[in-house]
Image (cartoon, rainbow, N blue to C red; front, side):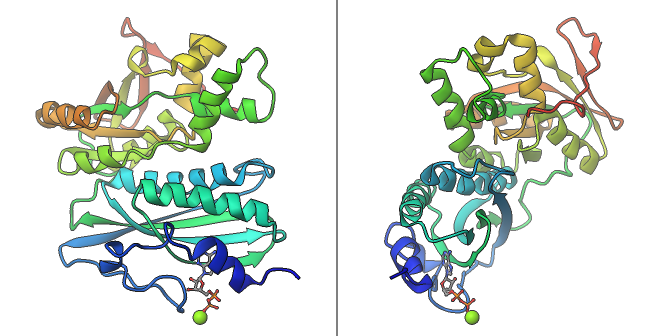
Length: 327
Ligand code: ADP
Ligand code: MG
């Protein structure tokens, strides 16, 4: 007999490790099982919320490993909390499934539990329906009231930074499509891991509260996402291309020029781009270093409205960013 919706929830979602533990129940007094979940928000905090909808064959291959998909779905949401300087509290899950595939659900539940534990972000509710495969997660986090790092706070003279290295998740799409030849299994693994298990920069985001003037997580591509900060802050930026941290794996696979294109234009890396006033820069750099996260100073916020790029000699470089497609 087919497993009921109720049994799916109790077997795969309402289980220890995935739902709040006794310590977490202090702020999450009611989770799965009632009409609503309840979250207690301390008076000095604000609730930060973000949602991402991932649709099969649009955002991921329909036959993707379900444990990896679960980790990616939670990570991309947590990355939005990181970009605001919020601490994860809990998440809700909307699932549309074409059929009940218990092997898929088992893997999905395992992957979700791994990430929920790693990032201390338990599942408190959701909804399920029959339909084309799609995964929607909404995360809830806490941030000190009035202290969230917004996209709108960058000022001329601020330094522009980016965490980690860029380009791997963009090139990974070619591995998933099997359109990249001459790649070793080890290199393929590095790229797939960047795509399915991006590291949400939560500790960096928290360390940046009170220091960064603006931040964004890189989902659309470095230049496009810096453009969001620029337009919301009503500023321009000058980016030094030789300072952009291009992944060495991508560079060795496609050469520096193409690797730089991936780093600038391909999305899905989920690193943070931040702006910091010059007076705060030293303290900011020290704090991020303590997080053990690579940090690159890649440019400067300017007056104006353009995000422009210069080469090592200081000459301006025109890039067809908008026209660049990674698949
Ligand atoms: P309602 O009909 O009142 O909306 P449901 O029957 O859809 O409630 O859900 C029952 C309970 O199970 C709720 O607490 C809901 O949050 C939870 N739930 C449903 N689907 C999921 C899911 N995919 N993941 C986690 N919790 C879920
Ligand atoms: Mg109800």
